[in-house]
Each structure stands twice: as structure tokens, then as C-alpha cells.
Image 1: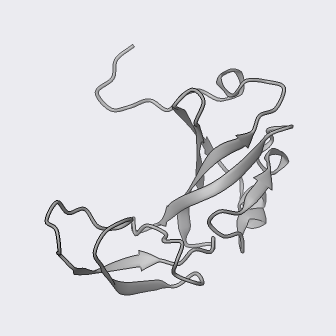
Image 2: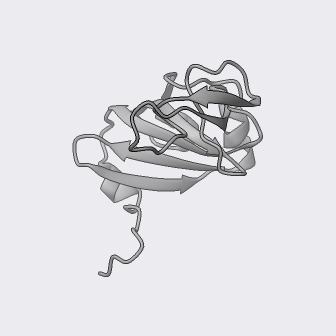
Image 3: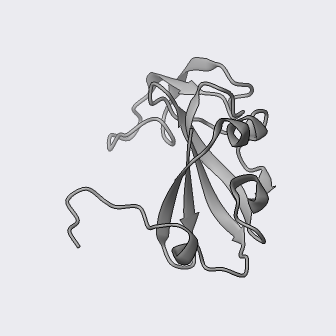
Length: 131
């Protein structure tokens, strides 16, 4: 499982691969839950889960309870890209609880620690961006 950390102050995002032990600590946590950075070896930090996606790429939605994948009727928001107003589509999305089928968890920094994230983690490289 991969965790993506966004820093709202700098606008940068960082990726970190989780070990199996760290992964299991996230099982049962929900979108908008706050957790300590000690879970991912970042002392003094607090993070909030903002979303994620499963191994097939289906996004997590906060209003869907549980861990199951469901087909719901969407008009806007997570899981639907549309510029047409009034469009409704039936799409598959994942529930708001983290389970073993989740491949990526998106988080944001709520409380900063002593060390800067830039020093601890490398910024996420964007495709097409050269150094």
C-alpha cells in the first residue's frame, strides 16, 4: 500500500510505501480520521485521511459506508468527471473504510512535527517534469 501525503502550506505532495505491519494499522480507519505520524515513522506529525483508491483504481467516497465496492448514481464529485450539467451516471466507487483491497491512501498534514517533510521524504515527481 502507498500513502500520499499533501502539505497544504507548501502545496507539495510526497509518497511513501508502507510495510505490511504499518498497512494493518490503517485497516478500519475511515476518511476524515486523524492519525499520528508515528504510524508511518514521522514523529510529531498528525495527518488526516482525505481519500484513496483500491487496487483496480476505483476511488473511495466518504458517504459510502463500509469497505465494499458499489455502483451508485453520481451527478458530480469524486469518481465522475463531467462538464455537462444535469448529467447522471452510474459508476463504481469504494466505501470510506480502509481495508486490504485499498492500494493508495491520500492524506494531508494537520499538525507539523519538528523536522520538515522535505528533509524526511522526497517530493513526488510529476511525469514530464525534468530536473
